[in-house]
Picture (cartoon, rainbow, N blue to C red):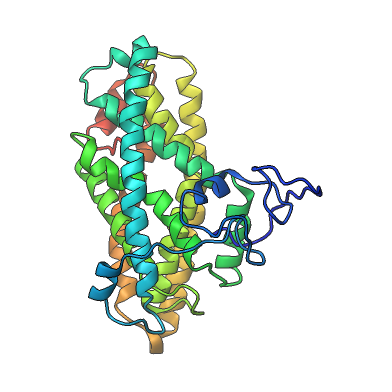
Length: 328
């Protein structure tokens, strides 16, 4: 998704590691992209700091059909391998961070039941990755190209989607006792991103499966901006009696409402336009909206929980919490 020039430019004959070859200041998102295959310090026009190069895995590629206008098997292979690689890295990081936090912070080490420690670290890990996306100007400028100009990057857009969903996928395997709504949420996001990896987003248009894939990326875009919610969900377990949690909950709720309002409004406009163009109507947008229903339901439950949150826990908070997703 990082496909336009950064707002930061540095003119110098010396090129430190944190400066892109074209003179732009490297952003957090660029640092993440460097862990993927790339072409060293080459650039491709207004591409990200380092030009992307897809993963290749011949045994998997031979199982897939040939490419077509809408299907990109090479990008699907890159997406699946990227998901595997990043999932392993995130899982190892979560276990390592848990042990370090457990050693350094007595409040964290005293969390009971113990399985909640993994929930805390998983939320902080998700907040870190989403924060890297949301705090990188290139991410938002690239998103303008995608959703206003309909000019999507092939590999970069999909890898940003993978960065968004990978902690959800990892949480399904390493976080115990996730609420049912959270499980549905994580399965939905993972399924949508895998679908996106196989679709040629560079084709113009917003109907059918192509439009569904692009809107799936859009959902991740606005969800990334709500990363403070994940920080709050983690810290309120570690420091349940901290007075500042009340204000952090209000701030998280406000940011969440704003992100969801933009997200849902754009989705509603898109669906209305798809239905209006009924001659090109297909079943995919409606299947997508059914999937989105699980995400929206989860969002609403969490917003209610944030609204009723009280430091130390109150009657209304416990009532909402019984049905809430404890992981965004």
